Length: 598
Image (tube, rainbow, N blue to C red; front, side, top):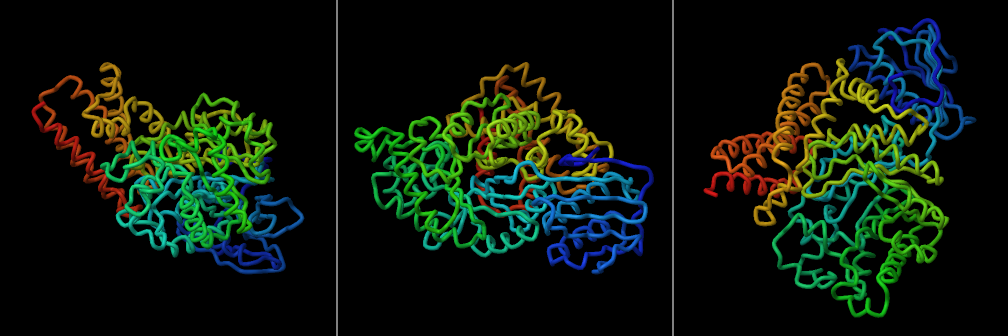
């Protein structure tokens, strides 16, 4: 069928419709500016695909030799019908969103079939009302506004209707320049512009803000160090591992909740969404430092729930629905009943072997929940595609079984976010596909072919399978590179023969990806794939040479520097400078080591 997501109903018939110069895109008389926006997107796709521009007009009649967009509010929310006849194409949708999704499907048909479209009838509607994508913009990489708009477009194309941008320290909070000065933060104006852009594409921009754990950059400052659970942490040198593992708020200090309140109240006003994700995950240090005396009288779970409820109360006063990560509370299930019933628990698990245990715990508490899989790109130059798809497939199935109200597919950026934008698109699309229609067969190889053609314009339909094969060659990842720098040249414990095999395969795959570049229409994404593949090869080579104590390590230093020079250019194309300098420091350390006598 080659459509992502798969429609609920698809039936082909004899004949075809030819898209040709001189036709019109007609908006029905009862339509609004939402349908006009959809018509403009279709007009743009046809111009880019075929080189001619169709006129847009409004009419009471369904004229032949035209593409007609019709609003029918008797249909279910977000549903549509797409009818291709020999004389015209009709898209009939519930409100602006239904018409919009019908247009996205028509665009995919155009990419699949060209100017001659098969006559067919499609009826389609979503399974999950909440279909989200969670994108880390705080662990090192801050996208440009145009890139965030591109993310919105990608999400909408695959019928994702919620986007969350994860913020710890990368927002320009008023009076907190000490925190964000060297981070190239997202500004309030950028959030306002992005929210408006997203709404026109039927995507809800949901705020997501760290409000309990994961406040490393905030709690290392002179001003806020006193609110850190662990003492004397502002004197340590920067560490990627420390940023991941520590820096929870001290719940025994009343100023902690005041800080959270001030951040929330500045942030919340920028969004039209009626939801707010307070995060509150991985509070690793809770009760182990300044609140230790309090913890000696109150168990850790009670400390967590009491502070969590304070944060929930702040958000609810602004009439927002609260979302939070469920990893802590599932370990204290006896306290679930003390959390307000109207909050949503975000249950995450990123393993391809994910079980349903935690989902069952939350479901039995009668709390609403989203299931949260991942695109599995963090710490990697190339996403673990097969792991991601297997994980998404399982987590969506658990959401069906336990009546979850949504899917929130995640894209994290641990250890500097070296992973590039294009590498996550496959997982994004698959997550959107299953959130819309989970009743599809588990045929990953077929999906690789579909996404290669529809998203990347690869007529050979082989690109994503190459990427998937490359991803399996990462027995060591960028996390091990960071560990080597931060932990006294610690060498990963991986068999040398496995590394050599990974190196050989990754080198061949990298060359194949570069050879395929001329066949792929998405040139920008292709450059990111090429850069990523070269990096996988170099990391494998690095650990082989230091394990074997090779004499030609200085030549590898040159390769790393030349590669990273190209990497920086690709980074800067879609992202602000942000924390690129931190990644450069890691590469410079490797190259210095390779040139030393050791």
